[in-house]
Image (cartoon, rainbow, N blue to C red; front, side, top):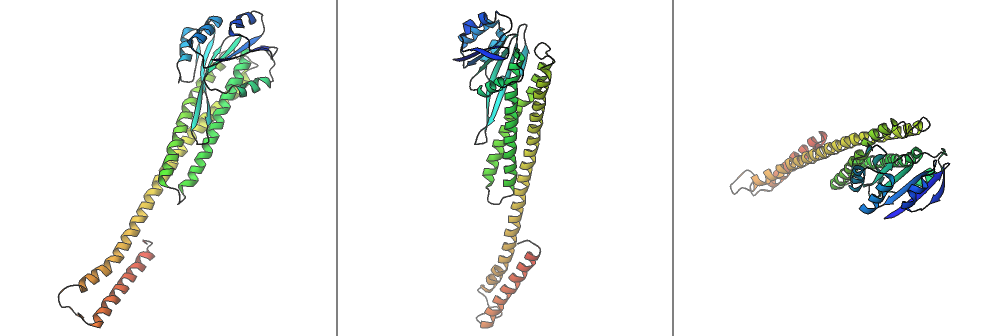
Length: 319
């Protein structure tokens, strides 16, 4: 396990990297708030944390279980939140990182395995509210998470625009388009699973008057607006992707119909010389048999009838 700790007083960090066992002593004095970050903790670390801060066993059990749904649970002495950060890789795949948050009156605990906390620290260091409140720290975490949701939605929107352009290109293979469509659909579904429940999380937090007072309410309302924006973008992109897929199928069907029409037209053109040469190839006497003029009559018939049929099909755009 990797542990990072900070103690804030008057909105500024005054102590860092103190031991977890010293947390209770540091919070005896009224005023300061603490942040504890646990990276990949084991059961013993979580048990120690629970003893120091008086965390509920159900909350500790939830943080041990991965792939929780984004949520906020209210306990007597603290809140427990599960949120997910998102990032779209160079291959277009959506990557998520789970983050568990214990919110007490004087401390914020973040538990994760791969969540990038450096951006959160920069937000805390540049925060305008220089006050010792856990709500300020929580705002920085949630703001970074939701901004990541918006960035992921914008990245997937760019991928969708490229997919829309590729649908009408002749040189792009159908298999490649199908693979990109499935990848984009999978990424949008994953983003929707973590964004949609965040609406309920933000609404529940906004109703907590102890954590979110009048000074913090506009900041949390701003995050709630960003969550709604990300959720609406995700739903809109899913609808657009469905339309793109339907358009792709229609284009494939039209191309197949055009190919079949051309093949049928050429088959009809080729049938004429086949029929004439087959007739003149009979082993029975016929007009012009073994005569030069018979050869020229059959050749003229092939050229005139085939050419006439070709011109007729071309005029009707069948070839």
